[in-house]
Length: 160
Image 1 (cartoon, rainbow, N blue to C red):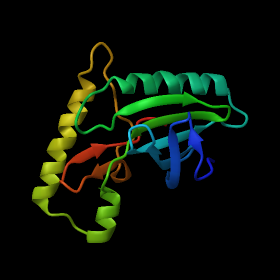
Image 2: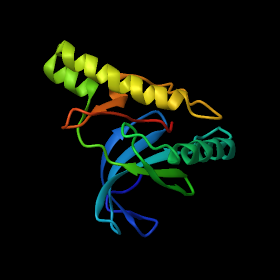
Image 3: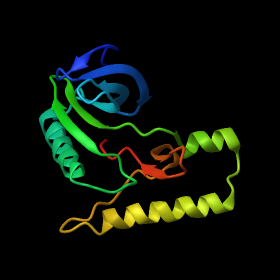
Image 4: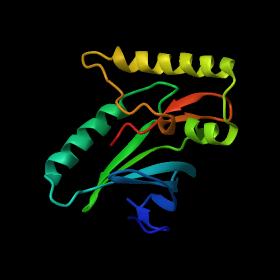
């Protein structure tokens, strides 16, 4: 766990925790060079695991994702290896997850659902048609689909 106020790599100031998963914690942070809000995903090493293999595979995956360029995907800016894991620095997506929206509003308007489905189909086609290696997104769920205030879909949580 990163302490709030910690500055990582003499650049990224951790502001607050915004999410938690199986082996990672997600923080809102400030890029002090660019004066921009970003997200740091702190992927922890596991006890009783081959951490070197895990960290190496995560770094390979994150570096591959850094090359992606689609409006519905957050950009990954930096990958920093620390003593307890790796930090993946990426875009902060303003908005709410579809899960949060559904819990707040209940049933969605069918026209909105169709629009979101088209946007998701577009980004999934982009990923699946990557050459030479298609990317299969394996964690599709309402938690991992963000809706921006402008009504655009963003697919998040690629790096485990």
